[in-house]
Image (cartoon, rainbow, N blue to C red; front, side, top):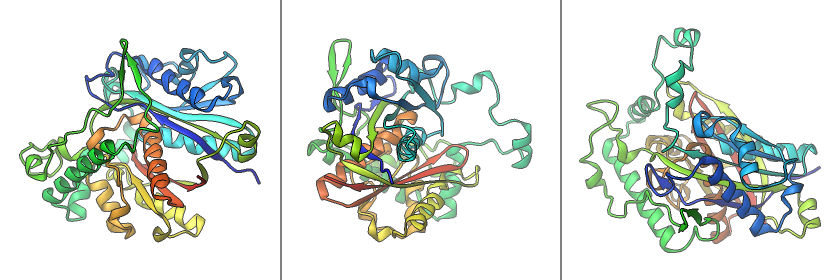
Length: 381
């Protein structure tokens, strides 16, 4: 039976909104990570069967199949195709899953999976200016609820009895862990310097090193006057891209490449679209049940920090070891460039597995509309 392995994984530094990456078009940003894979692995891009590219807001700079446009921007041969995938925040994680499935099925031999989002240039919710994405039948089913992830996060915090102090402490810890990881050079191996107007951008810029729970306690709530969710315990609006090279172990050997990890298994699950952010809980259960593994078998978990209640509710339901959760910080500290975030989380997962010699890692992300992906990878080197 064919396997699927990850040969290399790269990402851009994450730019904050209106920050360093703001001048860079999504196609050009994508091209730089695509070419970084070529440079690092020595692979002929003409051998790539497909580029599967996650992107959420596919209008303006990110319209017209940004996956294909990225291939052209990178200067790759015109015969290399590209496709754009949208599973909301999990778009590039779905790209990784789909690439692995295609390779394991024998339909493709070499795939690049990843994604991009330039939220400065294509703002979150920009698609709503041209129409209503849900439609009257969906609104009728859910009593005209105006689907809003921030409101969903408030509902989750209430359901799990999560206080603002707990959320703010978790968020401050995310900044602290990310700062330590940056200072220790944990990200250096997979972060690609990005050329911006002739200068090199190298470090995630959303990090606030002085953040504490006390500092966060002074921020105004965003969705309810008496609520608990605010900008400081939510993911940052960001710009970025990520890319992974996926093939079989046999094809990697033929090309003289040494894989980092094996794609072990994946699952996707739906959940209530009102509290849509709880999707990682059933997705995690599903992938563990499918494999026979338990949470104790997993050495590290990456649970996207869309809002602080998401990983905390996930912890409460799974019983996982809190010390294994997001040990390098997360989106609250460094940002969440939607279509790129699945690949970004995978680079962090691989970094922690390699530095701590952990056999299994699990990644999961909540997604708009109430779905979630969960993916398990196994370390090879």
